[in-house]
Image 1 (cartoon, rainbow, N blue to C red):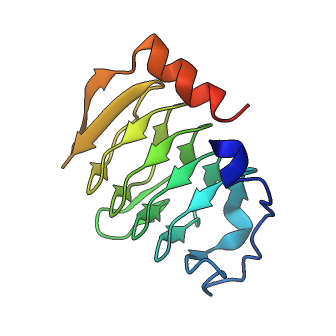
Image 2 (cartoon, rainbow, N blue to C red; image 1 turned 30 degrees about the horizontal axis):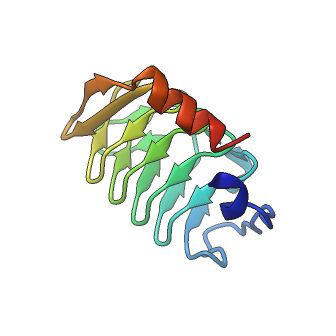
Length: 145
């Protein structure tokens, strides 16, 4: 249950370009908006130059990369991870991407386009594989109440 997981949650101290006590780091930290009761895995990298918004109850696996700017293809724009979405380990989120409420991104995915709410998506590039059932959505939302 989320309540047990987040019972003693406090916002992490984020210093520019330095690992948090949970071993993830942020560049351009002033452009990061971090919601309450988030869970970000070790060795995740967040480049918030073009703004990164992580809503409440978002879970991000270890070794993920979140880019609001990409120098390879000159893309820049906000990344928004909506309430209660989950990003699987080793996934990459590119600029100008929104992942919708409750959506689940499978491990090792490359997300370069918006993912709507209440779906499961994965792959390289990530594609929607199915919609969550009403029961699955209810369970996800119960876990955060």
